[in-house]
Image (tube, helix red, strand yellow):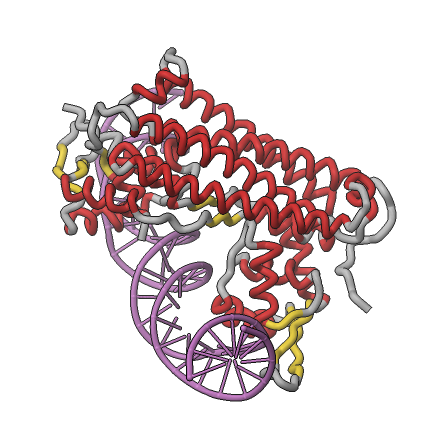
Length: 196
Length: 196
DNA sequence: GCGAGCATGTAAGTCGTTACATGATTCT
DNA sequence: AGAATCATGTAACGACTTACATGCTCGC
C-alpha cells in the first residue's frame, strides 16, 4: 500500500489539490512511481479520513473550486516510519523487453525501429531531468548543494532517473543495431526454435 | 494483458510445466517482468483454452504428475503480432526511491543503510547476469555470437539487466554516501518543509 | 464554435498479492 | 523428525486501468 506514501512524499513539496498532485507526479516522481488522476482522487479522501493529510476548500474565480491538501503531523510521522522500514525490491515492467526477449519469433526490422523510438524518448527524458537538476542547483555546485540544501531527496531521485534514461538510450541503440545487422543477413527465417 | 505474452516468450526456450515456468521467470525474465506461481497457474488454463499453448499430462515416479505446455502455431503468431505492436513505456515501481524522495522527513542514517543493502543486492545480481551471459556465449566472442546465434533475445535482455543493476549499485552507493555526510552535520532536524 | 486546460468524480473490469490448502518424496 | 523440493490449485483482497460523466473558462 505505498501509493499513500508516494502522495505524502510529494506533499513535502507543499500543499496541492488532486489535480496539481497528478501533475507533480508526472514531473517529479513519474520516474519511479506512477499514479493516474483516478487513483489520486480515490485515495485522497481516504488519506484525509486517516488524518494523514488535511484538506480545505478553495474558491476560485474563472476556474472550478478545488480542495487543497496539506501534510499533517501524523502524516509526517507515517512517512518517517515508512522511510525507516526495509524496502521491497524494485519491480520493473517493460513490455519492450518482453518483445526483445521474443525477438527471434517476430519481425526484427520493426522491433529495431521500436527500439530507436524508445531511444529517442529516453534521450528526451534525459534532457528533461538535466534541466530539473540544473533548476534545483540554481547555480550552486553539486557538492555544496548536497551538504547544504534543505531537501536532497528530489535531487537524488532525479539523478537516478537521469542515469536510468541514459543507460536506457545506450542499450536501445545498441540492441537496435544488433537486430539490424541480423536482419540484413538472409538466413534463418523467423520461426520458434523447435528442439528435436 | 501482457503476462500472456511473457509466458509465450518464455516458452520459446522450450516446453515447461507451470512449476518450471515459474522458476524460469525467476532467472531469465525477472529482470523486466515478474510473475508469481499463482498468476501462472491461473493463466495457463486460459492460454490453453485460447489454443495459444498446448498442454499434455506427464506421469512421474517419485514426484507428482505434471502438465507440460508447448507453444502452438497460433501462439507463435500471437507472439509475432505482439512483437510488431508498439510498446507501452516502461513502468518502474521502486519503494526505495520513494523513501529517498522523502529522505528529508525521515531517519537519514537508517536510509543510508538500506541503500547499502540494496547496492550489495544489485552487485550480486550483476554477477548472476554475468554468469548467464558467459554461459550463453559458451566461449564464443560476442560479435560473432550476436550475428550467428539461433536466439539473441535472451542475450540482449540479460545485457540490459546487467547494465541496470550495475548502474543501480553505483547510484545506491553514491546516494548512501551523500546521506551519510549529511547525517554527520548536526543542523536541520528532520521536519517537513512548511512554506508559510 | 472548438479544443485545451481546470477540476472532480463513479463504475466496471482486469491484474496482482497474500494467505491458505494439499500431499508425496528426498535430503539432513 | 523436520525441512526442502516438486506440483497444483482456491479465495479474498487490494491495486491498477479504462471508460464514462460533468461543467466552466479562456484563447483561437
